[in-house]
Length: 171
Image 1 (cartoon, helix red, strand yellow):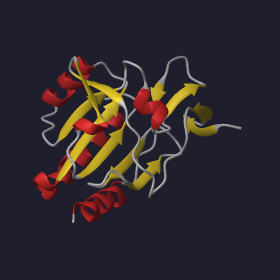
Image 2 (cartoon, one colour; image 1 turned 60 degrees about the vertical axis):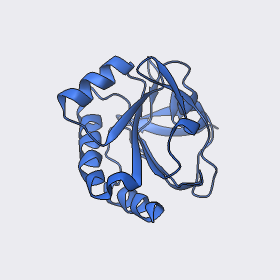
Image 3 (cartoon, rainbow, N blue to C red; image 1 turned 90 degrees about the horizontal axis):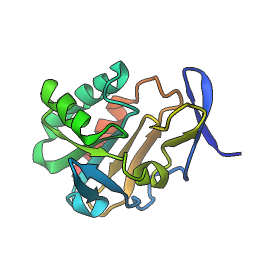
Image 4 (tube, rainbow, N blue to C red; image 1 turned 90 degrees about the vertical axis):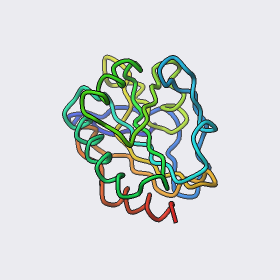
């Protein structure tokens, strides 16, 4: 039996393995605009990866805004990324319209490698592929220090726990 979460109460299947604290953060190839970006392109400092199904939905929008606000206190000691299957142009439009300043965006639309490698790609159960809502903190050495797979995709993550884990990883 594969790994599942629910989407509006219905079970959906996730591709890949579940990451846990202590695991090495897996690589990926995403897009920032039309440029490819990988884990190696992120700075060697504490990093937050906020994974959302689509920035064009209410909970995803709120998740990005809430983390954006919480990250401001940590300043340059951390790097933060919103990851989705949205096209890079839609991600850019959202961040501009919502004045998102602390996040960079990563689109996994090209080959879904983030979704597969980090265990968040909803591979079946919906009429299209999406990423399951999740949050990861990676330390400067590339180790996962916090991983949350939200059991119901339409629910919010634990913002306080993720931000506390990020602050701890930044020390």
